[in-house]
Length: 257
Ligand code: ADP
Image 1 (tube, rainbow, N blue to C red):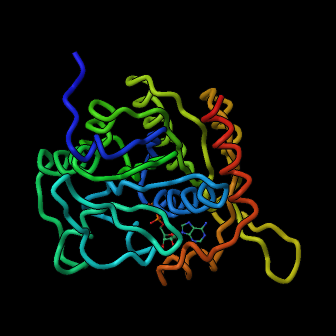
Image 2 (image 1 turned 180 degrees about the horizontal axis):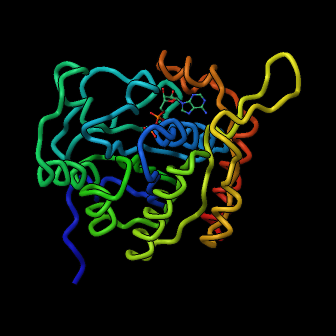
């Protein structure tokens, strides 16, 4: 009993759908989603980002994608970043970018579903879903209703972030998609004048956490003012990070396993 495909789905072919998740907000999940998209694109893949963080959308902003999403007979057209990442976010559908989205859970989850079923994504190797933080309504709907191939977990070294990422990992395990790996963001600051590594939030625990929960460890990222600056300016695609490219390669390897 195959579910009936919408016109937009017939016009799209998505190879892998990957949810990016964090236990709590502020660990850099959206930034990591954006950078993963950029790095995967640099590796030659076609990538889209579905911004499922409906009430706190940041994907259009960090990619500098503005203007309203287009509509055709077959569905909503995903917008494109300068570099070619396809993006869909509720912020591309409202008049003013700083208007709040005041919707209750059921409507929000319906919108997220529609971003999958009614958006013309075209040909994609990877559709990354930037989930809202935590284990609430939207992650539950996404795991129940969308064909998620796997999950990337983002955390930061605060022990609170580690405790809550374990909750997120346990939640994903209820729904069975594999967890491709854990990325520890904001692990340290590289002193600009010497080689010293400053561990702002305490000792990174990503490797340990990944081992404890038996998921692959994809790597750690420094806190880098250049990333924050470029993201704020809508130019995340101009950020160059060999460390990040390594992480994205490891992820692509895990996905292909
Ligand atoms: P989340 O999606 O987890 O709430 P964001 O990706 O929105 O977090 O990041 C929160 C803030 O931290 C943003 O201003 C972002 O630019 C900044 N940020 C995230 N990761 C880094 C990093 N590695 N270096 C510097 N700033 C970062």
